[in-house]
Image 1 (cartoon, one colour):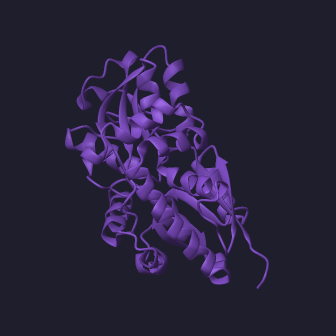
Image 2 (cartoon, one colour; image 1 turned 60 degrees about the vertical axis):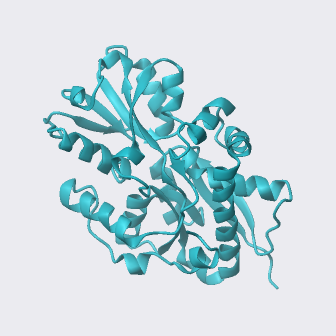
Image 3 (cartoon, rainbow, N blue to C red; image 1 turned 135 degrees about the vertical axis):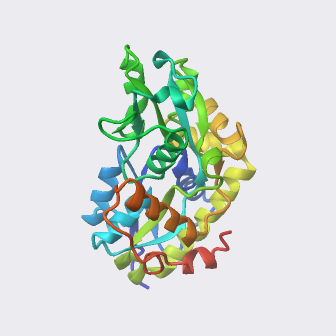
Length: 308
């Protein structure tokens, strides 16, 4: 048997990627032992850096936005989607200084989104359009891309209330609300119940060379998703450390309400991914083109792990 590979896994410090932190903690505490690989978690600051690291081969696996993953595949990256990392989990927050009390009040304002190739972009666009607002440069509402971890700073420094608010993965909504700088307008699950958002993608080369390692990792991640749901206190403790956040904030994200973030249904759903790529190619044009999802999604690992 050859030497165990070290699998480098890129992620952001967001609750959407918490199952990775749970898996890492289980290994550190010897609750689980990996026979086929050693994992190294690589925290990054923004989505671009994850995509670039993956395409350059600096990381082997990425927790990444589904539409960004599809775009990478479209541009020729040899990768497969093996698992969802969660469902739902994002929040729309209005900036208290902007006097936004309802969705219609965003007219004439800027809304921050975490990335142009994101489900967030789709959901906020859908919400605004449904309320009769037009989005885009020179229209009712303009979107501006800001890395999730930077959003709280932008709100803090926006003394004039030019930014109406934002949509982002937790804990960067609850964090701003706790500081008294914003208020919750909507949860992403209320716009599209049980929507996918971040996914786990692996370079083909790694899947081909170390399939047993990917099976083992997938099985652990699925169990980690169940732990987050069943033991929110334990998950919040892990999250506080893994995401560099206060325990109370993570615990609130995981429990108020309990279905704000779902980590127990991680099997990819092709129809959902197709809904995303249709919207982002036809309505917003942020994706370059559609992909063949059956070639992009590899179900074998999720199925073997019993993912729902």
